Image (cartoon, rainbow, N blue to C red; front, side, top):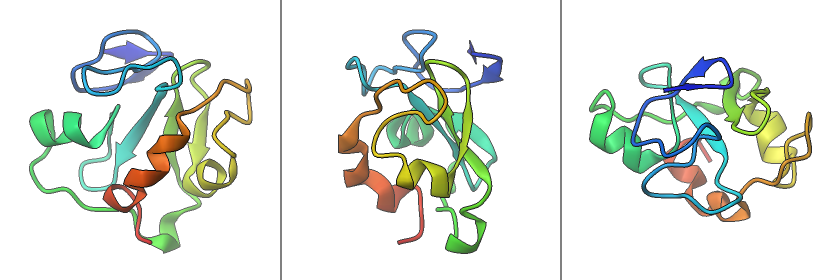
Length: 109
């Protein structure tokens, strides 16, 4: 699916990148998976439709863009995302603070 000018894969429900697994009002980011350089809304979408070899972003690459705001299409670096206090720094749209529970699935901790 094309979301704000970016291709996002997975079971997407709307143009803010909400998916079949996470679809509350604040579930509006997609994550570019390090292993396949492809945006997915969540790890479950990547498990179902991804490359089959999940790998997390190493800390030395946290300055690369890997997070897509589903509200405005702004791409955040991983550092920006980890520091953003669950809101897009470009448009102020709220992100799901519960995503922090899954950081280990996306980023080296």
